[in-house]
Length: 170
Image (cartoon, rainbow, N blue to C red):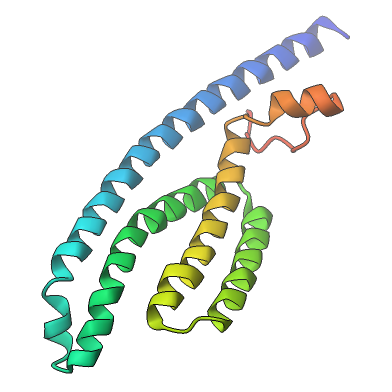
């Protein structure tokens, strides 16, 4: 290789490292933000859940169902918060195909679970959770790839990165 091509490779490697550092910093920042947002949403639902059923209905049976549902909705706020933040990072890394496949598989899984649901609590505690867990895991794979987690493993196993670099260099 010529000195120019070696120099260009080294420059590109430095830029990739700098980009990865920026991605790791953004990932850490957004993780903290998602935790805070999810926690606040969870507490808001728990607090409002004590009065909300009586605002929406006077029917005691519906209130009973709503009161049983509120804790599930409250704790799902954390899952939804982390899912949406991971998906936004994965979208920023151009992982659209990965997200589409993950959302499709999660939706199918949720539909199977929902078809067996016996109550509104089953729907929210199982089906909706399955949908968001699948989306979260898929987006997390994309974010881990953006952070370079898989690169050493793939270089060891395959002699090269398995994923095409999503990081743009100048």
